Image 1 (cartoon, one colour):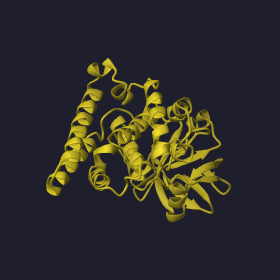
Image 2: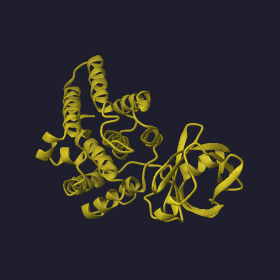
Image 3: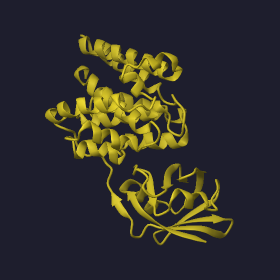
Length: 301
């Protein structure tokens, strides 16, 4: 039986390990084993992986994880600060989280206007130099978008949503204003599932929007309430893994990179870029684009 340790985890993930006692292996990838407990996904990851709200970072290399006798559907049990994975009644893998470093990834407060004024051009410059062929193509106004059907569809949704928000800022009746906000949020939420990979670009972008609304102190705005409701209603329009991250965003839980913007808003564009490039192929930059979008539309809200 293989025995290893969880060396770093989020407070959010640890809460689920304390709450549930049984689960199953949801899926297995090269350096991630996804577990599911009563519908909630947690991710066992290789060492040096970026910390997310659902992360359980181990002391294993990617090669170590590829050799594990773990497969989809196996039973999982939580006992004595250990995760046990079973084939029938035989334990084949054991992970202890007794000595894990725990990090709270809750985005707890907004930034000041001065901090946002400094951070906005830094984020934009990071996006311009990202080169991930995700939503950065849209915000860098790359001509490549015209030959990328997914990003072309995304750009159209963003333009339409922004036009609705402009009209909202000029509206003179409450009923009309609410309708315009609903239309704008609906356009954005239809980005769910847009893109390829474990977390489609559209989903990561929406995660960034949720973070941006918190950073800009707009989490209690009417627009925020509408888009959060619509994300919840459409959460099954994407895959389970991506849906788990969207649910985290609705709970105010984000990656270390996103939290870094709040904890250290004086970061240079180079540091921001390096931090967000660590998250997937384009996932980090797509979420950064969502944050930047909120910074662009904040004047309409």
